[in-house]
Length: 247
Image (cartoon, rainbow, N blue to C red):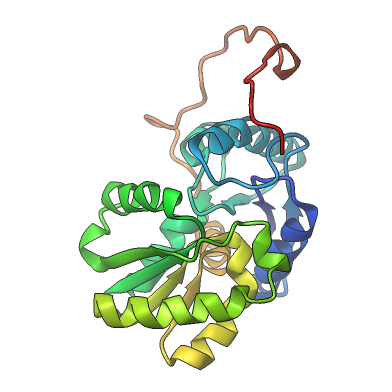
């Protein structure tokens, strides 16, 4: 079985960490290939970032289809481009937000999400509603640590732990969901410290895809996720100037 795990941002070190997490849970007979787009933002923390990332995600799915990939994980907690990727893929495509939150509902009555920036909270809350999981979500809480900073900020783990403790108590939750793929390395440690299940969406999505492929199941092509109609696509990203702020 060949699973492609797509990190929608272009930070290589994060792609490596995501791939290691996925490989650890995939099983001995599964080839896990972790990739990122050849173009796109270094992190996804806004609607613009997400929109810029999606074409690169779709390109990696299209390549995967040519290479015979059996299933895909989209490893960003906004689940960017998942629906579009399902139109291109024969096998299952699973986003880490949906997988992580659904897994949490098997483990307790209520879950809390700890994520990166406050500005991403409304989007995650919208996902809980679209996935039918809002009644299970006690709250979404932001550390105000940027995605890239999760790797470099020496206080990132402790700040995440502190916020998680507050969140679980305030929300009356018995499960924690990590709201960023960049937190994947925190999961086991946080679980030990908190004494509750801590769900990493990368692991949850990977095992979900492996399970679906093992059952011989792929994306339905009978309706919404049928292959898109052939049509001309004009221009290129080189022709687009979004006037984005300089880093």
